[in-house]
Length: 434
Image 1: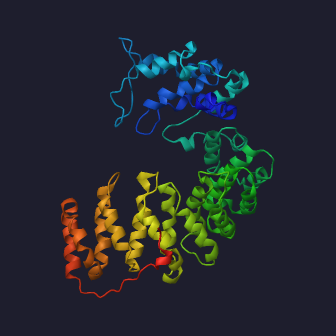
Image 2 (image 1 turned 90 degrees about the horizontal axis):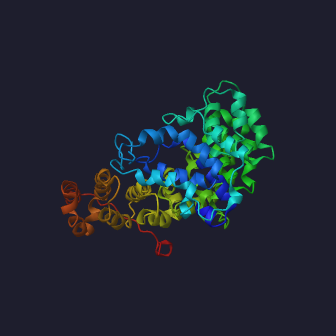
Image 3 (image 1 turned 135 degrees about the vertical axis):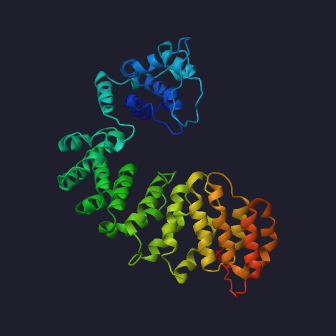
């Protein structure tokens, strides 16, 4: 809907077609399916009345069974659902009001040029068949190898995913055919081939060179899919690591959200494995610095695998960046951002970095949100590991006793009784983050 109101025809047609094809997926939804039923039909409306009719034909049985005796609609939900007890009457009535075009969300002033043709509607409905909520990756397992190869060229990323997943479980060797798709001029075919090779993992090793050639393509998503496939292939694709590290370090004004860097961050652990042997540090350092500034906490957290693979001397140029990443939360990805903060704090404690102590106390003061209770003991263990060197910070630690109780008291006692004479190192002022 926003795409249509803004005059973005390409976005409107793509996402309204996706909504049309998702008629069989309404039961799913993070923490429940309330919003799936609320926004789904409204998105389909931008594809035109023929798309709405085809979509509702597939959903009619559900709407009939959800209707109560008093005209209201029941929210079915799940067994443990955030929206249990919600009234579904409003969302369902909005769907029934689509022909009226009274509101912008129900089609008022809609751009008719974005309506799907009869052929496109039929294609979208067909692309929604065979979906399995419990095993979406196996939705196409009953289809033949040749059918799956054909499906890799679909306009729909969902169809390409299902075809790629099922193809990876077939017994035939299709790597050569997938490599051939990478050499075609059809973008969807190349995207589908990348996804299939990613699902095949190390078995796709013969396609490494063809995948590497995609890294220079002008299409951002093709580059991302190629990077993901190379990361899934792992060690056989390690020779491509220098090129991918250069990509991670480079700034791209056409990618303001740093999506490419995020996917590189997710692929590198598979590509580099448990060893950085042979990896040029002059390529690694700039890439790590950039990845530690990602706005998404989940992907930023993937960088931690590098920490314990670097020697103390090799960590020297990165300490300011590690301290910065351990001292500041990412703007998004709250549920997954703490691992990189804790990894940095633990690494500084391991190497006796003085700045790690106030950074750890700051973290403890602000520890809250999802899964906070599972991290408190680990944080107190970091402070305890500093031993006697942490005594100057005991007043701040004692202020945390009302919150952490026995865990904080144990850390205080351990520090007070410590006999070690560990010397702390300091990050040089000129390298310290502002």
